[in-house]
Image (cartoon, rainbow, N blue to C red; front, side):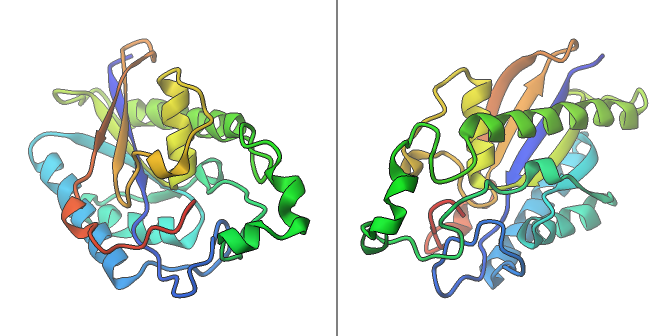
Amino acid sequence: MPQATVHLLRHGEVHNPDGVLYGRLPEFHLSELGRQMAETLAEHFRDRAAHGARIVYLAASPLVRAQETAAPTAQALHLEIHTDPRIIEAENYFEGLKVTKAELRRPKHWPRLVNPLRPSWGEPYKEQAARVRAAVQDARIRAIELAGGDFGTHGPEAIMVSHQLPIWATRLSAEGRPLWHDPRKRECTLTSITSLVFDDDGSLLRVEYSEPAAALLPGAASTPGA
């Protein structure tokens, strides 16, 4: 099969005035800045398509912020948004809380903080990486099928709109690095693109990273795990 690329796109900024870790909670929509980020990404992909990129498949996490981020790109490229629950945000015990040092010092939380390598406060990193990598492989195959022999210069491409931690765990796994990490050092900004480039036989050739909406990042919210 031909070379293909799957882009893992993180969603845009979310309206979250209380600064809670919203996780999988419903109805956390994009902020005005987040909508601008989503439009910027749509223009980025529209421009790439105009220059020959064969972007044929678009999927998003079921959470509303991912769906809203995907919507402008779907319109720009005339693609349907396929909802894939495997690329949803990680489960997190602290969901709905404002995670401060004072909150973490409360004894009731201590059992959840004993093992940061797993981590003990939420879905294991290995499970996150495994489910997203399975979704990526399916998207790669689907893109090849949809391309129908029209592969362009770099092969067919798929876009999957997901969330910071699952994307970062997937990248670490793909690069053979330890999955435990300092959340402050993740290279996965709002509406950044982590691209997995595959060879003809489906093996990973390389991982690429870009920030098409970098100009909109100064002043954006940085809630951990969002």
